[in-house]
Image (cartoon, rainbow, N blue to C red; front, side, top):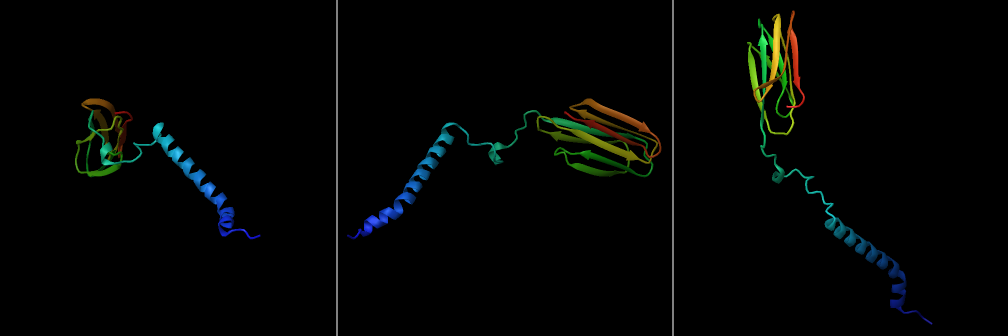
Length: 147
């Protein structure tokens, strides 16, 4: 008795075909369930549609004052909290950064060859930190953690 060709093919292919159908149905159910329960991350991509809107801009003003003879150096954080190094030629020195993030940080370090130096950080016109120091090659540091 000979077995037909179709029957032999069915014997070999029924299990892989069944597995393919089960995996396809499970994948379709998972995709539908993710859509129903809202687990798609719509904010994970940084597209232009998610741009930061200026809702409460803050002005951080850095000021350095004191004695200046021949050299001076200032290091402060810009609006992106990146360090900026400045070689100064005179004092007083002032710089303003405008930030639009909800909470910002201001940080400044200054040194001069004079005998006295001071720094001040103001946020929207209100002095938030101020320090002075004196001595040979005086250096000073001011910081505002929550502007």
